[in-house]
Image 1 (cartoon, rainbow, N blue to C red):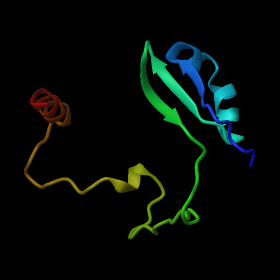
Image 2: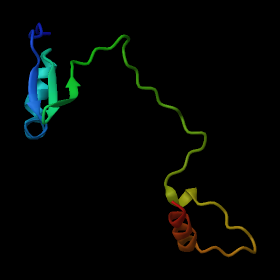
Image 3: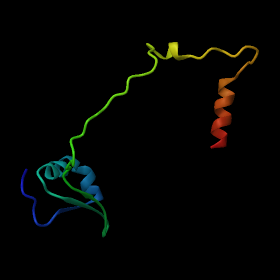
Image 4: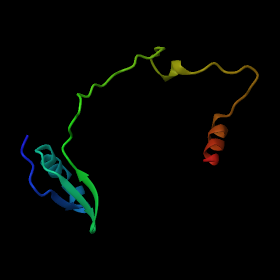
Length: 94
């Protein structure tokens, strides 16, 4: 990894958005980037450093199904439901 510069690279939000790839390459090489919104610093990008190696763990499902069609619950006997009405009622509560 390259030794980082003594002063970080500075960019405003618009320039940062339009040249994101360039700034990410700078960060990969060890530089820091500070993003400003007008005259206020809003973000600081620094190279990622892990204290311990990252390990992605997967959890096996308790039940296996091939698709959502198999994941449908059994209808309740004697109860008619209107899923659209339930959905609209739930959204109205939010």
